[in-house]
Amino acid sequence: MEKVLPKEFYSRKTTIVAKELLGKTIVRKLGDIRLEGKIVETEAYGGKDDPASHAYRGITERNKVMFGEPGHTYVYFTYGNHWCLNFVAHEPSKPGAVLIRAIEPTTGIEYMKKFRSVSSLENLCNGPGKLTKALKIDNKLNGLDITKEGELYVVNTEEKTFEIGVSTRVGIRRGRNKFWRFFIKGNLFVSRVN
DNA sequence: AGTTAGATCGGCT
DNA sequence: GCCGATCTAACTC
Image (cartoon, rainbow, N blue to C red; front, side, top):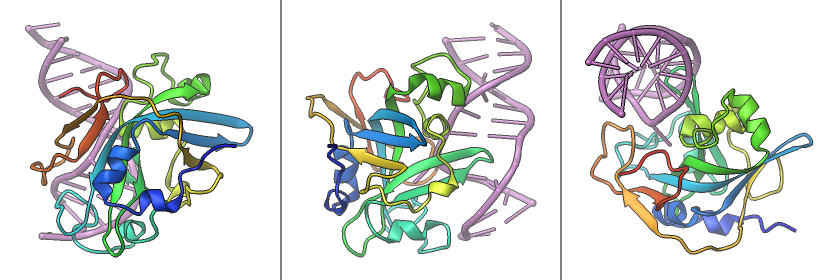
């Protein structure tokens, strides 16, 4: 049996969860198709303390899941054609979510390539908009419980030792002073090197 | 190798 | 209206 990460895993400080998610495996089920990838890059987004976060200005129809139960997805649309995948993770009564920025594809690679119409493995999932397309993730998966074995969940894969890199976040205007981006050092599938 | 336009949705200083 | 937690394709150098 698989060890699905429980709700308690996500019920901690958002930055801690972002770091802890590195090396874990995302499982995406599409009927009989099974897609998997190892998380190699994440970013933490907070609440009132974080001007870069959607939750900064309080609760809205779009961001309300960031204020809800940890261990659910927050999927949103941006720049006209891109979906971004987040996992809700925070301490009680504080909003927060972890943006999945890159994964290393491990299972179902041929399907992912087809969904993205690219042939290069390195460029398959090395960016937030790319991995959602490869895994066929869109707003239908918003608010999904990822602590249960369903269409999408995260399993605790073998602990391997790796060095964690830390940097400022990517592609934001405000909140550039925070070092809330985490990635596996030296991993080929990280979206960019700082 | 590096830069730029275009795509085109939803939530707001 | 406008701008964003982006990516691709199509250009130029």
